Image (cartoon, rainbow, N blue to C red; front, side, top):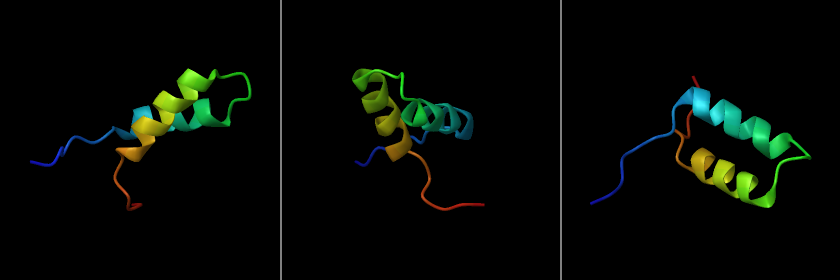
Length: 44
């Protein structure tokens, strides 16, 4: 059975900021990328 959980828009926004930050660690960026990969693909 497929995992149907999705990252909320507020978490996705914070994850995006982490990825853009030069001071974020490699681990933080990895977790942020994982969160973003679980967001809805379409835009409103």
